[in-house]
Image (cartoon, rainbow, N blue to C red):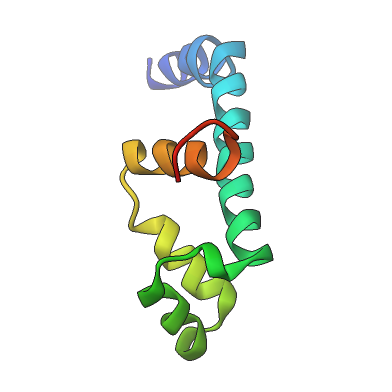
Length: 87
């Protein structure tokens, strides 16, 4: 019974094409944020620019992104990449 349910969920939910699309979009979204901040740390808020000196660039960027809510990350993405979005 359990293995049947697991098989059903794997085929119908976890491997569903829409789930794969969303997963890939999320990976690209997070990679874009990470790359934007690591390529130019001056875009980070001042307290995280200071944290770069203590923790290192990659750790500071990871900490900044990890502390974002979903909505804030979406808004921040727009501020970074949408040329018509107010900074």
